[in-house]
Image (cartoon, rainbow, N blue to C red; front, side):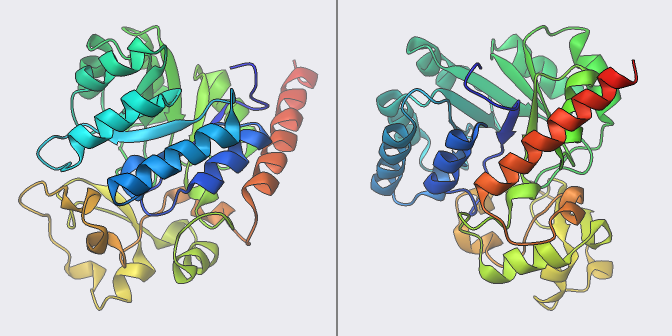
Length: 302
């Protein structure tokens, strides 16, 4: 996308991403996004979509849509919001993207599906999405376990669409490395958790700043799906991480029920790179400088 200054998509973070973050990201030169379910009720979500659309004009932006009908009680309402406000990019999660893909393609938009393994990548590719977001080891939220080198190579053997790489990408040099590996875009979430424009609780933001990679726990105890969590947030709720046991059933209610994950917080292994309070614009400007320096370094050494 020609309007971008660096090939980065800021991932849609549950209870964190806001319209202001998306607008500031777009104006700074990257793609911002937010989960539709961050705005409640539906009327509020419509206001958010209108705000971003008016704030960015032709600058690309994205929303996240949960395709899991049984869990997403707003499935039909959110589909109608997408149809009405026409977000340029729709990122799909947890379910078949077929229905939303038809709507988005009807107005010329793009659909990217996040996947954490080759099996799901093949299913998403067969559905005709425009891009795959490869969620690798160390990613915040529902992170995968695959090495990015191996995952990209495997996906490229059967897919020639857009590839977005996710998982511990924290610097502009990381973005350049992702491109060198074969990705079209880098997907970054944790690096932006503590920005001024995020709606994360102040205690959450400070915990992200104070934490390092050693404070991240990969567990399926809370939802039945493995995700990366901040250990200090688990401890403060009176839970001993050593006593956690696997959850027998997949429970995605946290995607709709705000209270379920209000106090147990997720972050990726890249949390070490977050050391102070910054604005979205400041981080993007730093990423651009780091990216340019990284590319220049590669050129000089070749």
